[in-house]
Image 1 (spheres, helix red, strand yellow):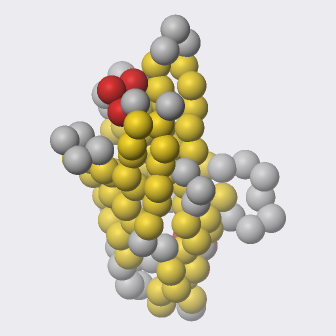
Image 2 (cartoon, helix red, strand yellow):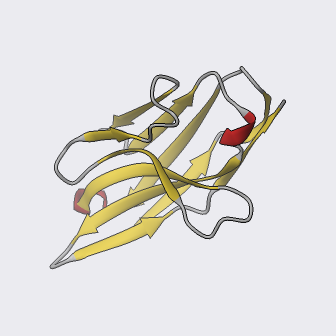
Length: 119
């Protein structure tokens, strides 16, 4: 299994920046994809913000393109999300996510970190 720990959330004013970090531990050699998702208050679904797919592609949500940058350090088993020009609508709990490959695929989530953007 893999454990994911996020950090870096907090309260920030609109227009400012924030960086989230995710550190993976455990069976990291099983990791095939990693990404950041978010869940806004009152919503049941988590939406993809940015991620590296199992095919090695980089994907961003249209709502964050040009503002957010995802990066990954495979050697350190970390992934970061640099969020610039934050907007109140970016307020959400942000989750680190990974897909592990065994005989099939297993999805693992971090505990989430709250980002609040004030206007």
